[in-house]
Image (cartoon, rainbow, N blue to C red; front, top):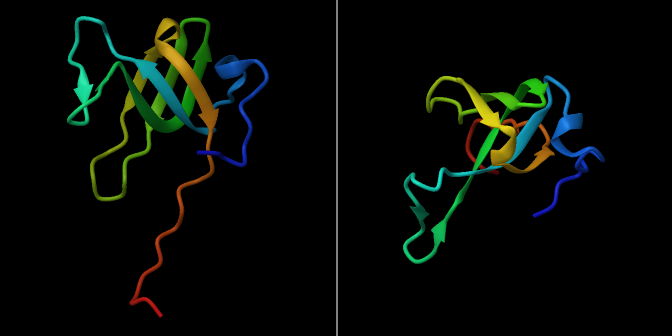
Length: 99
């Protein structure tokens, strides 16, 4: 998967508030393991807008699919951040029947 926006040179520390990002974070070792039916995963991805960047980590405002919940703020601790990358704005849905 590729995106037109490159990862900042300084990693997640260089992300700016207001940027829409995807953050891959580690799940707690004692927590549940997410499984797709065969493979266990120790990571999960968050999509949202950067609210704050600090040495402690990132604060994001989630970007839920319209009609599927309200945005909420989530803190991601620095040691849990596996990767973070800017992504383009959410595509605008077209209304009406397909042509």
